[in-house]
Image (cartoon, rainbow, N blue to C red; front, side, top):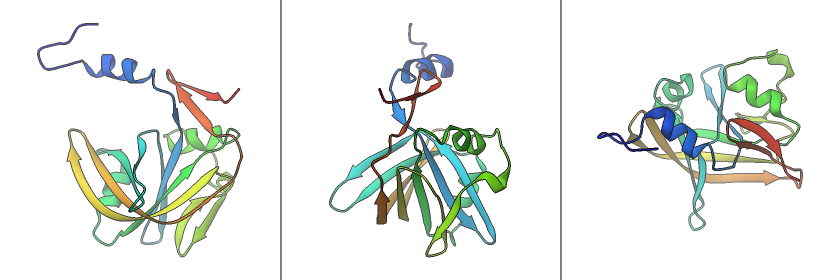
Length: 161
């Protein structure tokens, strides 16, 4: 692959970064009476002290408009388990039945039941970065299990082992 004068093409960039195996998360938030989720693999731990994470959200996504709202102060991060592939597809724009989503709430914030881990984050900062916004979150609450995570590599789902 060769770089173009403006850098890699979007397809070259996607293909190259697809070689990085990642977990699969669903970002969740409330907008008034509406709860919303979005599948995201662009999630990273930033700092242990203070506990900070970062998620990257496409500016065209419905979740972006929700997180950009001033009255939305918190969001959830749900690390999906190996058996939750249908939920990843559901929140990636291939929706299945909404009643199949195992929603539960933690202090009014929607989270996904059965996930390997759930984090409740206070929205700390929004950083515009190209066609995405990076949302920095201060982790106020977390819980986890020892279940196996759902993985994403080269555009496909995988499991450990």
